[in-house]
Length: 289
Image 1: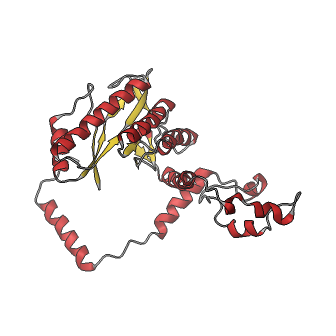
Image 2 (image 1 turned 90 degrees about the horizontal axis):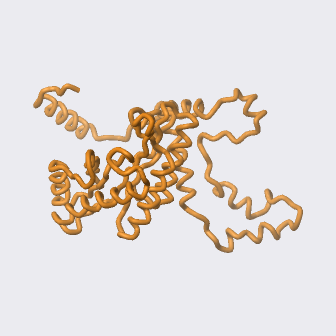
Image 3 (image 1 turned 90 degrees about the vertical axis):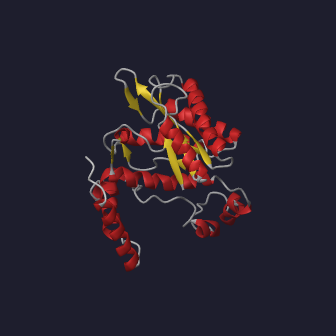
């Protein structure tokens, strides 16, 4: 398990407040893993140039990790980056844009040079709906994280409106894409079977390969299979109601919740946990929230 020791830069470079530093030391002393995450907004608390933002982010994250090592050498720490461009016309953060994506790729190279695990941003978007903007921005952000070699990605699913809201539809869209990314990251195996000379030899030139033994052996597992995509011809899709991606996602998350079965929990354990929560609630006044 890891805790995020994040958002420690709010006004100027290389500022780690006393509360955050105390938290870093406490977790390190307990040998608890921690993620050291500067929250950098280009043009606000970091330079608006990508190189400047990456340089500041690297320095801040390394300084934070160093505090953990000074407390307990060898305490597990994760280098982390959160880069955001801004709409310089309005001052609003923008997510899923190309410059922070380049920053994530650069941080991947730097993390490998330092031999440290890396945390990067995931399926980020400022869109208010699970629409085309959300998908384009999310993929720009997520692909840079996985191609940069991130070991920990946050958030991978459901992120909308700069994390001011989420969407169940986008959650299942993004988790479906996470499945595709697992296949993407598996890369390409090259061996006698995958080169498939036998598939080409079996029927000879000018023949399709649907019925070859090689195809029959692999057709169920050769390609990643989406739970949401519709790959039918337009005519068939139209005859079946012309259901779009967002509608399919809506149907899917509702089915997942409807079919969900909570894992088994011993009754005495459940009762003890509920009693503990009741005691804790009774021991303190309600907060404003």
